Length: 305
Image 1 (cartoon, one colour):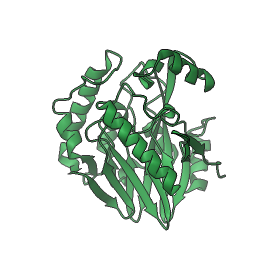
Image 2 (image 1 turned 135 degrees about the horizontal axis):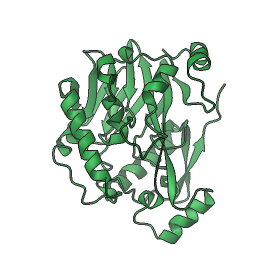
Image 3 (image 1 turned 90 degrees about the horizontal axis):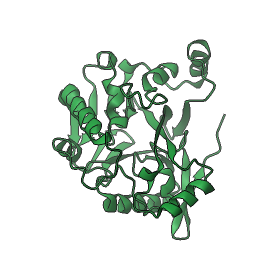
């Protein structure tokens, strides 16, 4: 599934893109592929709703980022453990004309030589539209296996039955779109859901763990084999979260808990030296975490060719 030579030939012949959209990592005996679903543009205010606007502007300036709109990367994972092919999150989908640079997952899986019918399991870190939308694209469900297992925290399913947005700070159209996407996902895939409470081993060396915070059922995925470790953090970590882990993201349904989850996760990664990948870190989003005073430092890996 993750044959680099075959993948390159496929891209050159059928899916010619100047910018790389996937990056392969080997975690012991487990193959991991980071796949970009593209980029969506959001107001910079959503990245730090409890920060002084001047402090937020300073951080953006120091990062050479524009002051008003920030391009949020969208990353998903594909992991192969034994005879299981596991898709971790499903990207945005194609129903959102305001985000024309996102929703690339079906195309980019095909470019990587990954047939949707080969996916045995899907892990949903949480049910925001940019994590389930790819499963709502016309024709996708019909290409998936009838025995596909979709793993999601029970707390997440319960939350989206009657979601509470009172602690979020999103652009005004977003909550209704989130409700609609979550409802459609549950309606279309409920029979294939495999819910778990706190932790579940999806495949040997691939464990999904509920953290809460960002949403009540938000989860991370830990991949471990042969002494190597990688954590897919979903939306627990954003680019600003290393320098300012206490800044609230506008999409966090429990901002204070999200801060606790973020700090705990970053401390753990700094202590273990394990690799980190997250949905909204710049592609390929593979790196490590170091402690930097009272905050943290992101250390991207050197690309391997």
